[in-house]
Image (tube, rainbow, N blue to C red; front, top):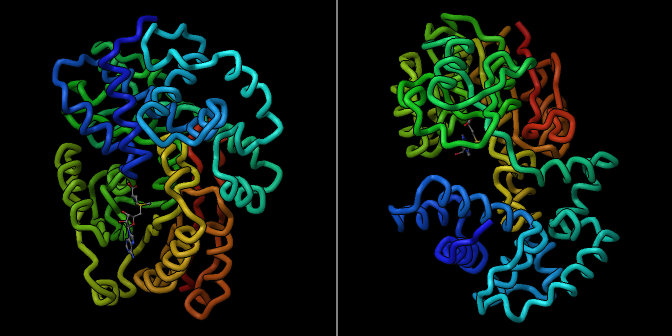
Amino acid sequence: MKFHRNLSEAVVAALQQIFFEQRYADKALEQILQSNKRWGARDRAFIAETTYDIVRWWRMLSEVTGKAPASEADVWAILGAWLHLEGHELPAWSEFEALNLAAIDKKRSQISHNPAVEESVPDWLYELGQQEVGERWNKELHALNLQAEVVLRVNTIKTTRDQLQKQLDAEGYETLALREYPDALQLVQRQNVFKSAAFKEGMFEVQDANSQLVAAYMDVKPGMRVIDACAGAGGKTLHIAALMENKGKIIAMDTEAWKLSNLKQRARRAGVSSIEPRVIESQKTIKRLAASADRLLLDVPCSGMGVLKRNPDSKWKLSADFISSIQVTQQEILQKYSKMLKPDGVMVYSTCSILPSENRKQVDAFLASEAGKDFTLLKDDNLMPAISGYDGFYMAQLKRKA
Ligand SMILES: C[S@@+](CC[C@H](N)C(=O)[O-])C[C@H]1O[C@@H](n2cnc3c(N)ncnc32)[C@H](O)[C@@H]1O
């Protein structure tokens, strides 16, 4: 494989932004990819995938190159080590001249005794995972370091899974229908599906397979009144709308107005008219909706510990303090927002985390509290990356007593 210098420079520039300027990986890449309109699809894929993979393996690569990267030259060394460990011959560039490949190989073989380095996570995060996830942690961590599959959710308001599969096939995108996920198609090869006519026509959204199980857990029926209280840009809201055949009403709420604006655009493309976005300005917004929903989704903000495959930079940006503070928000949302559910209604609490302290323990604390005394837990599920091959999620289905 031939490595082009300008693409490697783009990777180094993205990594410097991510690690030295604390920018989010997706934002840094978006800006860098926009800066050169002449790069084709393969060039863009190389820059994005290489950057993400190096972000994923940053600690391991720092260890094998011998020091914590602090300069542009160090980032070139990290790129060189990555290329070498991936089995590529290094281009004869001055930045790679000082690299000692034999020393890199030696260090790589020595780090297997330290799983935090081997799996490339900070020590505190490794220890937290051990305490919380227990025996399964090493397997889950390993799975979280694999590249995420690209999974589509068929928009059943506009098409069927069979029809969409044929349409995509005709456009040059080969997909697999996933047996245990009724609305899901998985790309056989990584391709930019956002360029397809099917996407522009609103036939699908890109959504992880396990994420698609959350809306299904809501047990919605056409005509119901549903509140999605942490809707964000509406990944799950749109799925709920499709399951309700676009009949009834879904109030999509969030504290961030810009996310709800994105949701509006996506709803238009998907041909969904049953969603009413509503920004949460204060607790009054919640109180006005007391006992008004047949179904309530609390897809709460969380650590994102189930989705490290697609957001590997979270490993370096998360902190124990952030996880503690987000847990306080999760319990507050359970306590206050659960009041929006009608008696006899069903509420789903979900996270994209695999930490019990954000999941079942939050539900148990809620059930033991005054606000939770009217609720019973019907079922819950831990969707684990190593078992399923997809992102990690937790979902609990609770009923409010009649
Ligand atoms: C896990 S994300 C939601 C993802 C979204 N449901 C989806 O499927 O794409 C959590 C969302 O909660 C929002 N949020 C944070 N604090 C909130 C609060 N106190 N009340 C409601 N939403 C909040 C965030 O802005 C974020 O969009």
